[in-house]
Amino acid sequence: MSKVARRRKVEGVKPKITHGLPVRARLKCADNTGAKLLMIIGVHGYKGRKDRVPTASVGDMVTVVVKRGKYDLMHKPFKAIVVRQRMPYRRKNGQWVVFEDNAAVLVNDDGTPRGSEFRGPIAKEAIERWPSLSVISAQVV
Image (cartoon, rainbow, N blue to C red; front, side, top):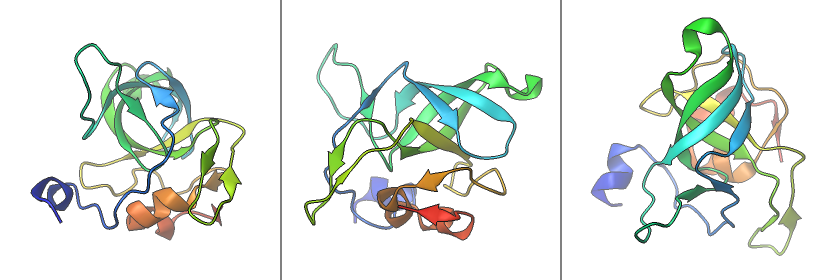
């Protein structure tokens, strides 16, 4: 495991998933922290080309800004993990996965969730990469 992966406490290797969420994409907040709508402003660990917009997918840690929600959370950067995306992606067993919306959960710097419950289904790829999410998640798809 590389130094970067150890520092971010990522357990598993991320499978290749179609990136469907560019910077400035809007996401629902799938936890009970008080945030309603999030906007991606950065993707952690993204290595791209000059002038290429960074993109994220399920299981990626992103930096977000709260656009709607509690006043004390508004317009401040937070870290979040993407748990659902609308763009279809293929699993290794050949199954295609599509969700109804784009969603993320707010986390601390070490990847532990800030909220105490999640709303809606959580992708299996996000749980495998961030095991601390599995403690709270009710539905894993």
